[in-house]
Image (cartoon, rainbow, N blue to C red; front, side, top):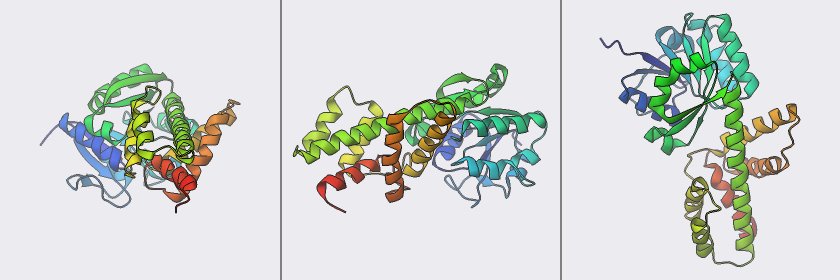
Length: 291
């Protein structure tokens, strides 16, 4: 029987299953919990509750959509915290509110559990290739303890600061990403409305340096109408909401990001499970007067 460390995934969707595959290649054993008991490629073993997973795993890695899902899986009689042994390591890669990360760490500390908030920068292509950037919040010694896991899933670990700092840095990054895409989409909207040739416009923007590589990737997909979800609109809009909520708490004015959130809210309403770049389709439909 293998003595390799066992990592228990809470949540095993598009990002987590790809991280799990890289961890398996690095020699870790993998087990998972999802409410449906499904996920990944079908080869992963699933357990019935988060508590059962925590009782079995050496390290628990959470990758769930939002604060509510994290709370449900971590707390209560069947939650992870009820099953983890003192001395355990809990890594939360979910994008949640900073105060949620701090509260989870405090609950873990009361049980002798080390908790790190470690959301990742990158989408499914980076998760598949092991090129994520890990944004870690916690004590330096705790980050070092988790470093081998981070090295298996990412190309770089950034120690953002104490617990909660990883979550804050992730909101900074996603806020810039979402707001910038909204600006690019507005530029495309003006170009189309003014009569520029559509193919020429998309091709021209692919050549100029003011568009980031990430957004050029989104432009190429939008040109062909391919909004396969690398980062679903429902999750991007959720992250923008978390950013604006915490920014208001910090009295940090974010007018451009607030405006972009409105466009992304419309995108979520119309295309919740498609990529957030479906904003291009929303804006184009307005000026082209199509459905």
